[in-house]
Every structure is written in structure tokens, then in C-alpha cells.
Amino acid sequence: MRCNRVNTIVLLILLSVGLTGCVRRRINITSDPPGALVYLNDQEIGRTPVTVPFRWYGIYDVRLEKEGYQPLWTKQDAEMPWWENPGPDAIAELLPNRTVDLDWYFSLEPKTEVTQADLDKVISHAETMRESNRRPAE
Image (tube, rainbow, N blue to C red):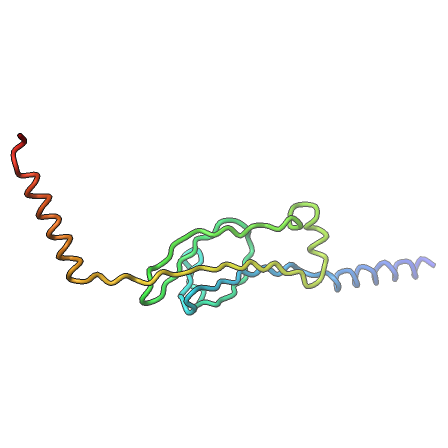
């Protein structure tokens, strides 16, 4: 009788360990245009679209670069779902195939070309301002 009870307990423990899951956390980053080089907390992770696993919720530094576009530096919050709070997380960790997917989308602005005419306007305006400052006050 005692042997059957011990065997049952061992079997239940082995089954519970075998059935437990682990929460898989991923950040999916896309951009317009695609193919931008992505840095997450100053670590290069690849070109968009890119998916990277993460461990910690919180604020991440994000940088995207693509030739012909303005580089983008920003912060993004990896928000924790309610079931990851202490208490519900103990149950969520036991469920198999639990996944947290965060989808981040960024839009890059094209670089603006500075023409010689634009530079000439700025220089002309600067010269006009300089001359107006040289005149004695009346």
C-alpha cells in the first residue's frame, strides 16, 4: 500500500515537471522601409523585420539606421502583461507553450538633401543679419 502511494507521488511529480512550460518572450520589430539595421540597448540585433528573445520587461533603447534615411533613436517600453505579475505568474509559468510577443513598428524619415540654393539662402540671410547688427543704434 505504502509503495503504491510513493510510486503515485513520484509519477505525479515527474508528470508535472514534464508538463511544465516556460514563458517565451519575444520582441518583433518591423519598420517602414524594411531592412533597417536595429540596435537594442546598443547591441546590434539584425535588420527589420527581426525577432529577438528578451528576459526583462521595462524600457529599451532602440536605434534604427538605413542608408538614405534619418537615423531613429528612441525608447520603447516592453510592458508586462497582467498574468506576469506575482501570483498569476506562478500558474502561467506552469502552462505549456506560453508566449509573449511584443510588436514594435517604426517609420523612418528620408534624409533631406541640402542643395546649394538652400545654402546660398542661409548665407545670404546670415550676411543680412550681420549687416543689421553692425549699424549703429538710432
